[in-house]
Amino acid sequence: MSALTVLQTETGEAADGAAVVLDDVTKIFGSGNRTMVVLERLSLDVRQGELLCLLGASGCGKSTILNLMAGLETPTAGRVSVPAGRTTLMFQEAGLFPWLTAAENVGLPLRLQGQRRAQRDTEVRSLLGMVRLEPFAGHRPHQLSGGMRQRVALARALAQRGEVLLMDEPFAALDAITRDQLHVDLARVRAETGVTIVFVTHDVREAVRLGDRIALISSRPGRLLEEFVLDGDRSSPAAHEKAAATIVPQITDLIRQELRRHGSG
Amino acid sequence: MAVAETPTGRAAAGLDSLELPVRVTKRPLGRRIAAAVLPKLAALAVVLMLWELVVLSHIKPDYIIPSPLDVLRGQQSRFGLNPGLIQEWQNGTILTAIWSSVSHAVIGYALAVAVGTPFGLALGRIPALRTAVGSLISALQTLPSVVWVPFAIVIFGLSSGMLYFVVIMGSFPSVVNGMKSAVDQVQPLLIRIGRSMGASGPKLWRHVIIPAAMPGYVAGLRQAWAFSWRSLMAAEIVATSVHAAGNGLGTIVEDGGDTNSMTLVITGILLILLVGLAADALVFNPLDRIVRQRRGLITEDA
Image (cartoon, each protein chain N blue to C red):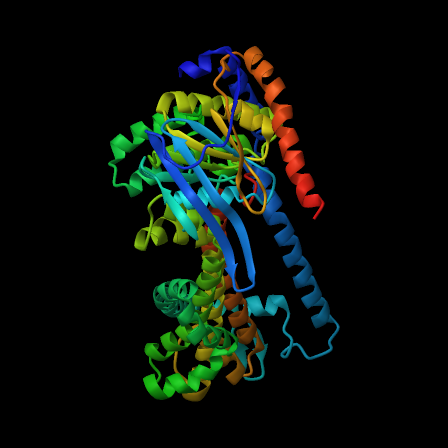
């Protein structure tokens, strides 16, 4: 079996076990004669437990897609539904509360849910363990490195117990070595929690590394350009390198074509 | 954890430890105190020296500009002894006056804080309220609080109520404005995240907005205290000059003026300054330090 399969764009109907469904969604910002079509007739579904990467150049409305999924914005036309339940957003900036320790940051969503102290402490410890931060439970954000802060943010997002985790370029501000490490951490978190993830990135390699599926989005207006299913063996680094070697240039080429389309006016 | 025992886990832990800042050992306590205190003592010495030089130059007679030593020990004049720090201490005036002034200032200040804090929060979050009274509050802040003294005397008479009123009018706008701008400066991302984790209404205030606003609020509190103290001194001096009433530090200054005793005037000024310094050193500097240190806004050993 080949490591990678390229599928044609599917339209419409939600597959069984869909966690999030975008059905023919159009999003227009502005009004009168100053409008911008950000998303045009976009149909996309995220399956239960999968990691879907939304990939595209700037201006492709990736963040708008996440906001629609999170319910922070409503579509101009079409329908958005989240059959899986609740969503949790995570951003490029960790956005930790600077007056709280790492453990208190992770514990705050649990506290807001009304969870009791003893139970909360246990859960916070296990969440921090999942992102390898148990020894730093008592540190405040300013005492942690950028990568560690983003891991606290991940643990805090998990504490919100959303069924779908929406990650908006969460590792974009980190250096390559740290980002690499966070990819490993995210894979472990997925394995332990089975959470469904929609991961926005503009980094082709990151998308290929993390995604079960990649949705390539065009820019202005955002449409689904192409979908890639990555179903090969990616457990060993060697197998992954091999897979990436074929798919990365392919996607990069599509993105270049898309950029050229905008460059020629 | 099982993760930490695998080779990749160990590499990851290594990365964490390399990325953390190197801990610098603190300097010994004695040296830190010396570094904090010696420059202040040197500055004080310079000021006393300049003062003494002015006295020695005889620009003015020494009953108009008494020397530091005269202010300490009192000064003989044609009409008897002009009291200085030592006499005022011995007859108990200093402690009584400090107690009277500090208690009036603290109570008035506490009331201003109690009313101004919720008001500032509301002003920070309710646009209509801000449009309505925001600029009025800022205008009040520029109004010298001494203008309230006649107003307060007419309403409250020469009572503690009059002093409280002037203190509140002087410091309330600073509390409100401090809290308002602190709330303005809360990062929208933090509020967004707070909302997304289910904090809304009072919970959002308690867990996100108020703690995030603390550094700015503390700065407002400090400024408000300065205004409280100034307002009270103005009120004491004016009230004493009209009705020979009161027994605070402002009274000492005014008494000195009335009896042509510059040593007493300077004694009063020094004491007023001293209380201001003490409030900063004992209350506001530590408070500010705690709030900022927690957030990493100052380095641990600075």
